[in-house]
Amino acid sequence: MKTYFKTQVLSNSVETSERLAMDLIRYIQNMIRYRDCIYLALSGGSTPQLLFEILSRDFSKAIDWNRVHFFWVDERCVPFSDQESNYGNATSFLFSKIAIDKDNIHPIHGADDPLNEAVRYTGEILSIVPCHKNFPVFDLVLLGMGNDGHTASIFPGQLNLFETNSICTVTHQPETCQRRITLTGRVINNASEIVFLVTGKQKAEKVKSIINEETESSLFPAKKIVPVTGNLSWYLDKQSAAYIDIKMS
Ligand code: 6PG
Image (tube, rainbow, N blue to C red; front, top):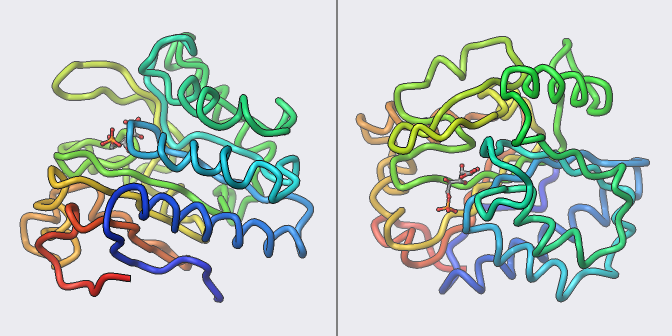
């Protein structure tokens, strides 16, 4: 299957996000030539903010955003107004600056009861995102990686979330005990394109361990991201790729 993404190392976080933004736009432009709509799931944290800024600054008119449905990979159980809110940040840096219908944006309601919200969000996904064998097939899932090797809101010690048949579930951040709602591993691995955006020297050890398939990496949730049939790519900067041999792009 043709892919518009490939694992690559750029000089710094700005160039990495700029390259991913360009590849994302090319991908969307080509996909919507054949499809009415495509379905993306975004991660949160701080890394994607630069990507969102670049998309809204340089590509706000590059596509009909109403041909894209945005979901979230995970969310912190906080109100949208909280600075921790993944939806709140994506709205500040991207959705408030592009022409997109609110019906195309599917936030996880972090302020609501987590168990009820996980059920509601599951229903929303199943009613909108195309499924194969009763599992949603996102066209693209954008992931980050924590310093501990977590991805989405699946943390070390929660690898059972790659076996469950649930679509999304309630977890918690082990250090802060902050409750989270997250897509489960099987949903993520069912996507057609899975793209990691990982920058910064504090990620370098885990990137090395995962890319080089070191024994300990089997404990890291990010290592369990293995597409069933889709493509996996890593967008890295020199700092996060400091210990691996991938030639600079
Ligand atoms: C979240 C994310 C999470 C994130 C990593 C990296 O809600 O925190 O979805 O998986 O991608 O924690 O976060 P940073 O980009 O802030 O390093």
